[in-house]
Length: 355
Ligand code: SF4
Image (cartoon, rainbow, N blue to C red; front, side, top):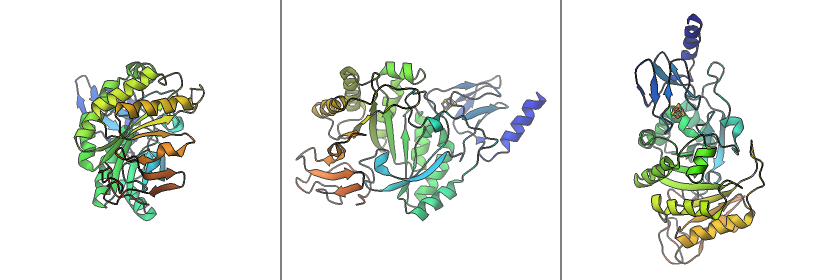
């Protein structure tokens, strides 16, 4: 007991350790975390599923407040966001670990590492804002691993970003609770990209017994509460690349997001513990056609050689509005106020087009 108390006292002195937002005490020194829909019940001296939150003496602490694993200025198109500040760059950061267990994770060196608060270093929100300003970034973005786990620190960083005229966004698996989503929105977050992994069985089998219902609920809630939303479906060979799975995603997209929210299908490449071949290019094109013919107005294919699938086309007259390549974007038939220059249709884009 003496030893445990010593460890707890040492941890509590670290700057990356703060009392967590969103938890409740439930008796017997246990707490329930309310940050993501796992809603872990955590006994004293132990951590939740994601290992970033720890019950110390009957209170819940985050171990990743400003505990960053990466900081980099990145084009917003890489997230991908195609209808949010096109052509801009965001100072992008991440912490450690994840609340999912996807075996094909591209960033497993970040998402599978357990935070070590006794040795990990601290970055302040003000340092991030200074850095973004110095580098000429237009906004800030939490990405690379699951940003839900960084929410305590992101709330402070995003409110500071708003005060400095920078946008804020999340690149997320969408398993966050509505309470946490609202805290972020109130702090100034204006966009969220949500990864849809597939149907119920995919979430259950590959994501650590998770459920797709919370993800679609959050897509609907975020859209209706005024956040800019884009949806991504990584088509993984042998997991969710059959026509039935793709139709399921398209149907849910139309039901919970609607016709005007962009839907991206991204091509998978082998990584971490999953070594099936990259997604068949024919399957990618079938997904594109399925979504377009079902009524999704803005469909994109990522990680494929044909850049035409990354352009934004007017759903009314089919003019190229924004042309994309590895070199950046070119504004074509779209006015600065987001009208199609050919037919006048208003295109749903948030923020300035920076070309
Ligand atoms: S954020 Fe972590 S501790 Fe909290 S409910 Fe989710 S997995 Fe559990």
